[in-house]
Length: 307
Image 1 (cartoon, one colour):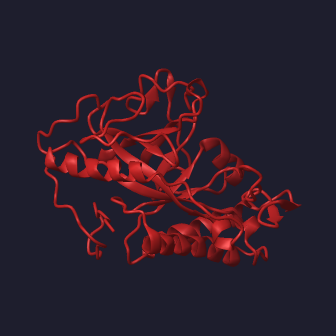
Image 2: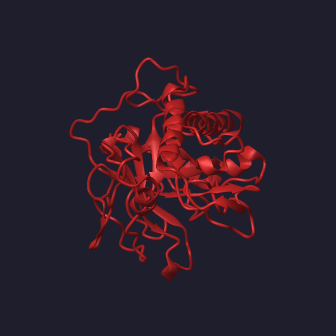
Image 3: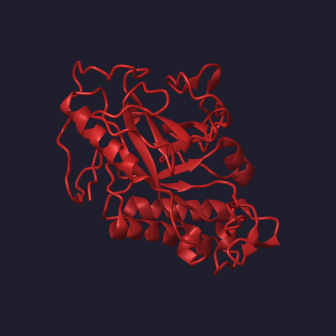
């Protein structure tokens, strides 16, 4: 499997490691806005057309250089659910465009394929006992499971990121995982609420455990979190939720329109918002299942110069 090491030194790579990229006087790909940014997608759809290089679907402008694949979920970890949101065509397109960018001295190297794990809060931990130690272990064990799934079944990735997906539960086609433990205690795979409150310090401990497992992994994964400012604030309040060292993928202030595409963290008058006091804003999910395009999929913008 391909795992591209960018800045972390002294780590053993898995598979092919791309060479050093020159950043002097290098052109951006036509349509990128601004230089150093690329477009991307995540999860099931949309599906990219496999050109070389591939461009962002629908808007057909700018280098397609990032795809976020779901490696697994907390429900899978507990045996409640199965499956994951992976589009194999988008994996290929994102990874090949990394090679394209390197070969053409692109300003910044695209992320290619990266991963995310739909994480459960402390309230769905089957060993929950109300302590920060257990909550920390729950977060740590989820990250270890995510890494093991990548090692066992892929997909091939080109960036050492497994974002901790912290979001509100979403019931899909009657499946469990509706209550996912960030703001309540729940049993029966998240279908039965036991308590409508979860202490923010336990949420923080779960995040800390997950991020530590990534940071200490011999595979060299980086601390990374996906969420929205609204849900993050609701979950952690004002005293918890600080993640200054984590790379961040935010989903907020989403636009219902896809065209003409985001430019420099803004889509018209709508701009990205961030959470947790991060020093590493990296990805903005600027529209999600846009209603004007019949839920065509998720669209992202990435600042490659910030990674």
